[in-house]
Each structure stands twice: as C-alpha cells, then as structure tokens.
Length: 251
Ligand SMILES: Nc1ncnc2c1ncn2[C@@H]1O[C@H](COP(=O)(O)OP(=O)(O)OP(=O)(O)O)[C@@H](O)[C@H]1O
Ligand SMILES: [Mg+2]
Image (cartoon, rainbow, N blue to C red):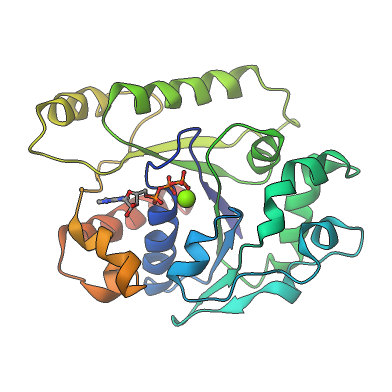
C-alpha cells in the first residue's frame, strides 16, 4: 500500500476537495482506496455522507491496542473506504506527544491494512504541528494543493525548507508533490504564476485543478465532482491529476 497525504501549511487551499475527488478517481480507476480523515472538522467525512466519530476517540486509537480496521466504513463507491473524522482529533498533537514511538504510530496503525488497500490518502488539517511531522513520517508523498498566489507558493517553500532541516527517521522523508489548485485563467496573476510553477522545484503535476462552481456545489450534492458532474472541467482535472499521481506512484 502506498500512502499519501493531502497536506498544506496553508488553510483553505483545496486539501479536502483534492482528498475527496482524488480518492474517488483512484477508486474509479480500480485502486482500493482508504481515505483517512484526520481533520476534526470532518469535511471529507461529510462529503462522503459518513457519520463522523471513532469509538473511544484518538485516545483509544493511539492506545497500545488501538486498531484502524475497526473504524473503517464503506462509502457509496466501490473500492473506496473511509476512516471517519472524530472531534477528539483536535487533541491529536497532544495525544501523540504522550505516545511511545509517537512518530511511528500512524504508520503502525496503517500497517495491518497494507494488503487490503492499494493507496491510503490522509486528509490533513492545515498547519505545521507535531502531528504533521508524524504524518510526514507515515506517507510516501505529500500532495500539496497550491493556489497560484504568492502567499500560497511561499508556504510551499516553507514546507520544503522545513523538510530539509527536519529530523525525520532515516528514509522517512516524504516526497513533496505540489499541484496547482483553484486555477482561474481569467486572473493575470494566476496565468503568470502558472508559467513560473511549470518549471518550479519540486516539480508540479502538469494538470492544474481549475476553479469551478462544480466544486462549490459539492457541499450541497455531497458527491465527488466526478460522480455528480463528470463532464465539468473540475471532474476532468481531478481525473487527469489522479493518472499523473498514479504514474508517479507505480512507474
Ligand atoms: N477547484 C475549486 N474550485 C472552486 N472552489 C474550490 C476549489 N477547490 C476548493 N474550493 C473551495 O474552497 C474552499 C476550501 O476548500 P477545501 O475545504 O478543500 O480546502 P482545505 O485546504 O481542505 O481547507 P482547510 O484548511 O479548512 O482544511 C471550499 O469552500 C471549497 O469548496
Ligand atoms: Mg480540509
């Protein structure tokens, strides 16, 4: 099983939107997908109409006998399962800090499911906390939605700088895989930055996810855009982006 995180230091950049739609596209392509909602807001859980809550909360999950399999729920889509969010995730940092071998804990929870899924996708809250560091040591790559604005690009640079200096377990530094999120071709700033990002390091995926009202409608329809409106630019964008991600995961 490969593990990915939808992650950014910055809030509101499209992490959850990407996690939901990429999980859907991955499952459509035949992959067995586990979406793990690590954000106490539980937006990804909400989009998949799954009831939030993990029995015993993070405390039990991170405990010595905690296991992930007990919390896995089916979604409306074949091959797409979900570990719902729980409000106690707001204490994830604190709880991890008091856990032995904390930086391995999330990886250890995923390990027993290794043969059951092709890919695990973690939807993370914004910020750079201890829990984020634990996520870094858990996943193969960070998918980083980056809105083509200077501030958003700056937080991507901050992330790379942080990883360069971070004291992660050997071999546990995730790759940073940015992609353009909420691209609006009517904005000159977006168009200009798109050209710069096309040659940036670490390399961006070729597909830019467009700003789209179909994405905004997700909150009402509670379906991934590929299911609700497959012919929209957003749905095609996520589909193309997933194939680019899959090509990097399984070259
Ligand atoms: N491609 C898009 N086109 C239009 N709106 C979008 C797009 N992507 C995201 N949005 C909207 O932007 C807002 C933030 O998106 P989202 O919740 O995915 O970001 P996030 O990074 O997960 O936020 P948070 O940091 O709060 O977890 C939402 O209202 C969402 O509908
Ligand atoms: Mg989110």
